[in-house]
Length: 410
Image 1 (cartoon, one colour):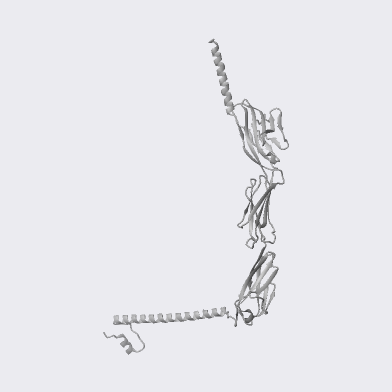
Image 2 (spheres, rainbow, N blue to C red):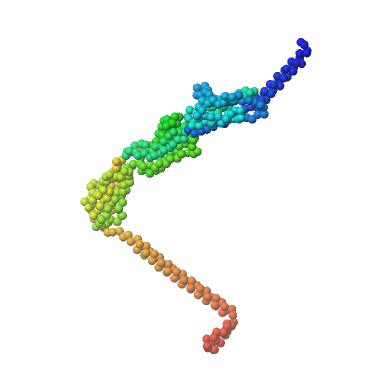
């Protein structure tokens, strides 16, 4: 080997190494920044953000390409920006580059999309072709949402005591499909259906709440709750149930003071139902009604109370509506004479007696206290008399008596 050729070879090798190191530094300092997850609303606008990071090395962007990954794995071109040829966009009415030219703003390749469609949803790839760094890319996932419209209503069930639909909640035009829940403490069942919405790619979800009608459920409120990604919080729709139920009966009018000869009394059949009762029937536990009574709808009129026909008689009222019947009963007891119920006079007498007793007690206590003080005063006086030889003079106009009172023999 000629030694003179060795230094030239070494120089060439060194030059290649330096060039590789320079290229390596340029490649390692270039990367793509993108917002990897983007959400847009159907028929509205959004932006797919993508840009090249700043670098100290001089690089040239030769082309920007946006691709969309199809469900079958293939890719379709959405938009291309060439420094000399300019932008080329598949759907220029809805899609535009934010940067006007690559010469002036070569780092920004963000893509603006308007009038979003359901088919716009998917994974996009933002690709920079540069020199000398080569090709750099980033993936962006776009989700297209559609806000649903929710309505809820109470249904009118049939007049029957069977499981049936009593409320319905529909959330229309959502993407993805809305989620419906019922908030209620009633023992009901739920049936849900889903179908295509009014726009392509949207869904309509309907949920029906069913139960057996009852008086306990009538008038109660239940709430339909809809959750969706496009909403800031749950959409709550409350409805009040209106349910039919058979009669629930009670009887009023008997005051425990029915006596022989009492006139113009009546028993009333109080029936709570929906719809209102259509028929009332009065009877007794032993058979027909006494001839002294007259049934008029929900009332049983008694002209005169009679011991022979009414004492210990159990009266029964049966009320009927389209859902069924309900009944209740009451037993009447007749007395010979009226029961005295002068509760006000009795109370006054009791109060008067209490006042008299109180006065007597206070008087006795007063007398006892007076006697006690008098005895105590007498003992104190005797004590002072036995301990002193003289008293102060007391004059009653009789000098002799005064002298005698002021003289004490020891």
